[in-house]
Image 1 (cartoon, rainbow, N blue to C red):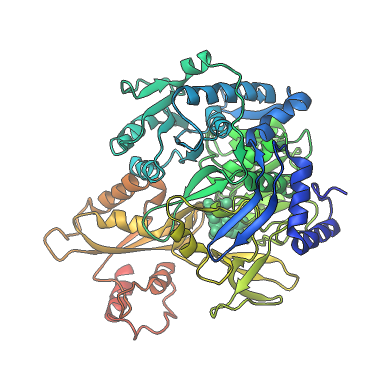
Image 2 (tube, rainbow, N blue to C red; image 1 turned 90 degrees about the vertical axis):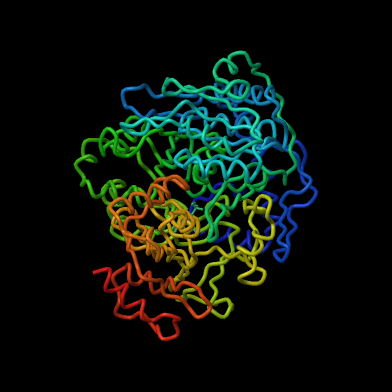
Length: 635
Ligand code: WTA
């Protein structure tokens, strides 16, 4: 019996047990039956979390684009691979068939080759959600170039940091992007970034908004004419299973972002297998994930997972509130979307607008609803279930991370009974562990602790680009022989998991991970600022918002003046992007510190949340008096 498509709960348990008892036999079978290999592996898995080193399907040869495109040409050539829904509802949607995608990807791959990109080179992709983005990703994979997609909302500084960190030779961008009623000038952001990126040799520019832009001689080229001239034949580069497929940056507790490196074969197998089972995709379903391809959700569940399964995947360029809050539902109706995958922050924003927008549209095509990116609160869960799914479409609350490459804890639609706010059960092959403060694994149910994973899975990141030590320190040092997720979780009486949130200095704002350190670094650049500390506080729509405690210098510069708040937020926007702007700023006399000089964020968090009843013992602080003055100052 094939285990590729699990159809009911008993089968889940049965396959889960098999996957845990004999992981290598299990994954070997999945890999063998459902993917195209140029050569099979010599060894399914070798691993050592103390190094850490993990290898899946070692010795195998493949190209992921043969799995995402070529193998479908015969059976599904005319089937729509990608539905592109533009920002404006007045612009026609585009249906790109597998045959057409094949042509576009191979032409693009040849353009890359003609511009001196070879296997192993890094290519930065800084594009809006237009078809060229998915095509560029696949074109890189076709020739073995490592793509590094940077979300097109990041500032020029953030872009430059990411380009330099992995030494990209090329940047692919567009003249601009549409975002609701606004247009953004992406090319000038790239131009600014490249002033600090001496190693970038070429820039390819897709035309989207037809604006007048600056083209730098010998460096910049328009993409379209190059594509027209390029051949549509392109033999795939034959990759080793463990060759890197892409780098994707995620924020961490310290300054520089972490370039998570994902490898080819394991990532392919796991993203495809999870897609099929979590969403219960069946042909000819239309699947829509509202994320941006600039995030891991878009990589795994707009591009690779769906295409590997020969699915039809929707790519939406716009925003949920343009031209009004009914846009998502209009798209669901128009394309008869069957699986819909979005983030709690979007659900909360839509719920706030009431149900009048929903009532205007026929949502009867919806079979499965998904959520990802942050814990979903009970109210949002019920709103989604009652009004969008009409209690008929199961909600898959999928917990995972950029680092994990694919969904890790989740219901399987129609198999796992759901429970509001619970991500429920581990996916096939995933072995979670909850750890107590002393580093012991908590056995049994009704426990909560720090969430770890104790056995490798195929799509786990293999390293941090250029910094393997940081990979080890961040994920494999807190607990011996375990991957530490940075999240807290509880296990209820039946073994269901509920993710309770980050236990480190990462704050999730509107589903985006923000490290506190890079924001503090940006604020501290202001000449008036002595030091700062950022904490999160609950926000109705964003989940968390940012609260900044800022101490000014004693000198004349350190005055609070009218523009100070604006200037500080501008610095943050310049360094990171508008998503990291502070919602609240409080200027303080000092920050509470331990005797070793560490800022006590726990206390600051409580004050920001407005809960000063139980601040714990403040007498061990170096400067307990500061706490009182901060509480006073907040009022
Ligand atoms: C959080 C996104 C609760 C979590 C795929 C994780 C979640 C971080 C959920 C990773 C969920 C993601 N319930 N929390 N269903 N999904 N998270 O790297 O804190 O952008 O560690 O990957 O988001 O965010 P990232």
